[in-house]
Length: 67
Image (cartoon, rainbow, N blue to C red):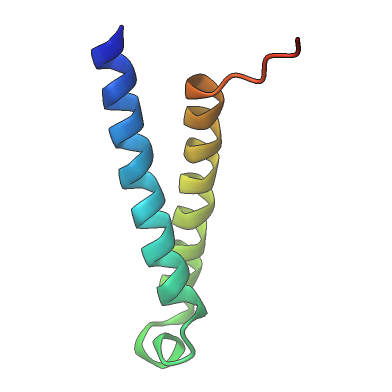
Protein backbone atom coordinates (compact mmCIF):
# COMPACT_ATOMS: atom_id res chain seq x y z
CA UNK A 1 0.00 0.00 0.00
CA UNK A 2 2.79 2.42 0.88
CA UNK A 3 4.66 1.59 -2.34
CA UNK A 4 1.48 2.19 -4.32
CA UNK A 5 1.04 5.60 -2.67
CA UNK A 6 4.68 6.45 -3.40
CA UNK A 7 4.24 5.56 -7.05
CA UNK A 8 1.05 7.64 -7.21
CA UNK A 9 2.84 10.53 -5.55
CA UNK A 10 5.73 10.20 -8.02
CA UNK A 11 3.27 10.14 -10.91
CA UNK A 12 1.59 13.24 -9.49
CA UNK A 13 4.92 15.07 -9.34
CA UNK A 14 5.75 14.10 -12.93
CA UNK A 15 2.31 15.15 -14.19
CA UNK A 16 2.56 18.49 -12.42
CA UNK A 17 5.99 19.10 -13.94
CA UNK A 18 4.72 18.31 -17.42
CA UNK A 19 1.66 20.49 -16.85
CA UNK A 20 3.86 23.40 -15.76
CA UNK A 21 6.13 22.93 -18.78
CA UNK A 22 3.15 22.99 -21.12
CA UNK A 23 1.81 26.04 -19.35
CA UNK A 24 5.06 27.89 -19.97
CA UNK A 25 5.10 26.89 -23.63
CA UNK A 26 1.47 27.84 -24.22
CA UNK A 27 1.74 31.17 -22.39
CA UNK A 28 4.97 32.16 -24.14
CA UNK A 29 4.13 34.54 -27.01
CA UNK A 30 7.24 33.43 -28.91
CA UNK A 31 5.93 29.87 -29.03
CA UNK A 32 2.90 31.09 -30.98
CA UNK A 33 5.29 31.82 -33.84
CA UNK A 34 7.16 28.53 -33.44
CA UNK A 35 4.15 26.22 -33.50
CA UNK A 36 1.14 25.96 -35.74
CA UNK A 37 -2.32 26.64 -34.35
CA UNK A 38 -3.04 22.94 -34.59
CA UNK A 39 0.00 22.09 -32.47
CA UNK A 40 -0.93 24.70 -29.88
CA UNK A 41 -4.45 23.23 -29.72
CA UNK A 42 -2.98 19.78 -29.12
CA UNK A 43 -0.75 21.15 -26.37
CA UNK A 44 -3.73 22.83 -24.72
CA UNK A 45 -5.74 19.61 -24.85
CA UNK A 46 -2.82 17.70 -23.37
CA UNK A 47 -2.58 20.30 -20.61
CA UNK A 48 -6.30 19.89 -19.80
CA UNK A 49 -5.93 16.12 -19.79
CA UNK A 50 -3.01 16.40 -17.37
CA UNK A 51 -5.01 18.73 -15.15
CA UNK A 52 -7.79 16.14 -14.93
CA UNK A 53 -5.35 13.36 -14.11
CA UNK A 54 -3.70 15.54 -11.46
CA UNK A 55 -7.08 16.28 -9.89
CA UNK A 56 -7.96 12.57 -9.79
CA UNK A 57 -4.63 11.59 -8.28
CA UNK A 58 -4.86 14.32 -5.66
CA UNK A 59 -8.32 13.15 -4.67
CA UNK A 60 -6.97 9.61 -4.27
CA UNK A 61 -3.92 10.69 -2.28
CA UNK A 62 -5.59 13.41 -0.22
CA UNK A 63 -9.22 12.43 0.29
CA UNK A 64 -11.57 15.16 1.44
CA UNK A 65 -12.56 13.83 4.86
CA UNK A 66 -15.30 15.75 6.62
CA UNK A 67 -14.98 15.30 10.36
